[in-house]
Structures are given as structure tokens and as C-alpha cells.
Length: 295
Image (cartoon, rainbow, N blue to C red; front, side, top):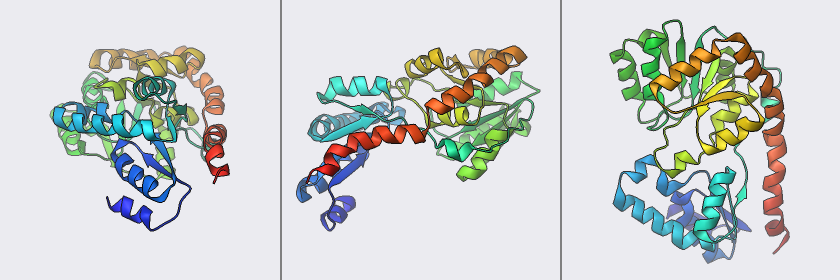
């Protein structure tokens, strides 16, 4: 509740809670100060894998979501599939603001891909497909893997790479600055963003790394899940796979075909122009405008 007390000492037109774990404090701060209450849902919090496996914890978060989300004045999330589910569950409309990067940050990025180098960016958490990806490396002796990020499973993934005998071809960089991360993307051959659909949050997700790879002009392996399939239908920038060793190996094999690779690479510029913050910020501004104009 430290956040709520801080909000009480400051005046705001709107308090925006980022995900359900800040919603109670945001609600208290907004209601006690007369501010508008916004809700920015990056994910379906009560359906995260680490929440789903703990029924009592999940029940508590579901109670908060059911009680407080209908009381928000403005709500939005990262993709149409989640927006549809939230609108149905909570009886109030959800806007869609995709979490996409600035295209300007990638201007001038010169791609110099290292043959066979696969890159993963993001949190080293459960359900991110890292276990089957590391297992796939055993069948891909000509490939290397760079895992850019940190998280609770980092020591376990390092140990797994050693147990599988692939540690000499797997680099764990830890957390990187945005600039250093873009260097890694420029040097990669393909990006990896597959997910294990553990809970509705992952099944309906739309990860930032998907769009980072697009901006970098990097063909990718992505989840065989609704949001990604919808984008790939219009912008074939990657191969959608089930998050398991055999499909991952098969997809990497397909990307070894120069014609397939070049087709995906050629689709990236149009997708990068469509999914960038220079365009998406106007969507966010339009959602906030009615509240910022009113006292």
C-alpha cells in the first residue's frame, strides 16, 4: 500500500495500474483523491503459469480482478484476443495498445547475421520454451544460441545446457541495455519467441520480442497461438510452431532453406512499418484524450 499512500500526497487526473498486482493500490489512490482510474493489462495476471499452479493465490487475484476491473474508467491491453476475453469477463470495453518498439531505434541497424545463430530475448521464466529449445540444440550441432535476459530460471537453464552437452554453443548474456540488445539482434540469424500455453495468459499473449525481431528484420520462430497466427496471415515474418523439441528442430530446418528464409526476411519491412510505436502511440493518445480533457 506504499504506492497508495504516495498517491494520496500528490494530485493526479488519472492513476493507471499496470496489471492486476498494482490494481488495488491504484484503485485506492484514485478513489481517495478523486482521480480517474486506468488499467493497463500487459497480461492476464490470474492466468500466469506461476499463479495457475497455486489455486489459493489464483483465487485471490481473480477476486481482485472481478471486483476492481469493472470499476476502472479506462482499460486497455496488448492484443485483440485478450481485449475480447476481458470485455466479456468484466463487462466493460477494453482498448488495444500493442507493446511495440520505436522504429526509429532500429534505423541504421546493419544486419550482419552469424550463420546458424539463434537469439532469445526476454525473461528467463517458465513457459518461455527455453527447455525444448535447449534440447533442440542437441540436434543442431552447426547452430549456436544466445539467451539475452535474466530471471528466476537462469541458473536452471545454465545447468540444463551443461547437462545436455550444449553449453559450449549457448551464451547467456544476462540483462542487456536496449542498445546492446539491438546489436545481438543484428548478429542473429533467427529469433526465437515460442511459448508454452500454460494458462490463458500465455495462450492469448502477444510478446514484445515478436515485434523487436520484426523491427530488426529478423525471421523468427513464434508461438502457434491465435494472435501470432493472425499477424502471420498478413505479414509472414516467421514460422509458428508448437513449443516442443521436434517442431522447433523442424522449423529451424525449414529456415535453412534460402528461399524460405528470404521470403520471411522480405516480409519484415512492411510489418515493421505497421507495428511500431510511431503509429501505436496515436492509439494510446486517443484512449486517454477524453479523460485528460475533462476535469
